[in-house]
Image 1 (tube, rainbow, N blue to C red):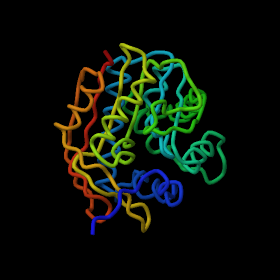
Image 2: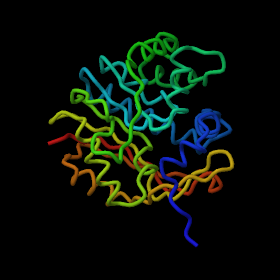
Image 3: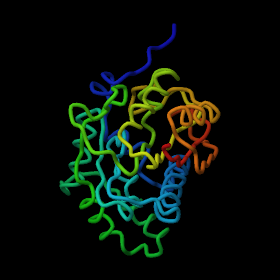
Length: 260
């Protein structure tokens, strides 16, 4: 019997942000495979926002989850960042870090790594404060809706960022293509999409619970991005050798695309 795809209501009921963060984002030398994904992502984000010169007033992050690492380079290039997620518990986890609450997740190992890419590992504390200042809003988002931020209507952004969201939110390729078009509506013509996905993955684990992923190969991903009205400017792929008990993804993909 085929297992049903874990859609948004399953996340509301069962997704535990702390289990997720401690499993995938501890940045521990003992977790070599998980660390490989993080370093791939941080280097690609550095390439896009620092070396590649993507900049502007507003960046909207689609499906932030409980994470802030994706903003460590972007905060140097955008005046304001809007974080978004479907679940209350993920948005609250971000707010706990923004408020510096006791017990908030410790992102400092990743912050130090990014500061090292920028040339001074010791500037990690000011970097954290810059991220906190730059995140202006943390909003509810549903990529399956024509306006993912409804009932809000925001001015079009200069940049959209989305890391490991769409393949977890979309049960099939038509839904994925539709979601790309939905989020594209939040972006100015000429604006950029920065998109990270896990390739050829069908599940990942958080605690004892299994969450579904849409199986995406590179060809399908590129076709969907182009069909949504984007020109791909650069794309990087790397292999992934994580324990198959955690997930079954084969590769990681980062791309930057410009909206027509």
